[in-house]
Length: 114
Length: 114
Image (cartoon, each protein chain N blue to C red):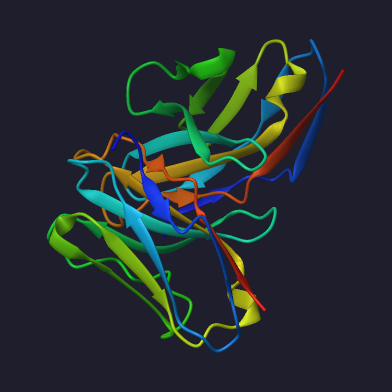
């Protein structure tokens, strides 16, 4: 597609349930990022994939969070045993090869844990 | 470590007046610097970037940013603000060595009064 696509756009889940958030990056983009944005707040880095390199997982807040990227394209962010503090907008971004290029963002998934 | 500071949570300016949104950074190696804008209920949009070359970078919607290496700053500017510029602005940095993920600042809310 033309841009980064995220699904679902909204997700309401009960505390303790697992959720999966999906990101389809722009075709040909080798880098993929996940960020989290709480209401009106800044962007919190979660995880970064670059080509076939080992992902940078340094931003994942707990072991309940995990992400994978299959075939160097689609990525899934999984949150296990969700907690109310996990409620936020989860943003995915991708960028083409080259460090001088910025990232292109999707519209995000708004996760609400009730 | 790689970091970005946006010292102002909010900037208020009257329409027609010049605006400045401040950003300072810390990074290993040479910096790649970016500004993004987020309108209400919208995704992040790229505004401009500094890679190398001229210290004054021009971007979308009449915005520009000035790179100052000695002060490690990359302030966003516009000569004449519009009400429609009211949004959340994020500065981001990536170094050309070490960690390659984009690090974002906490964001600055720009409010332009008519």
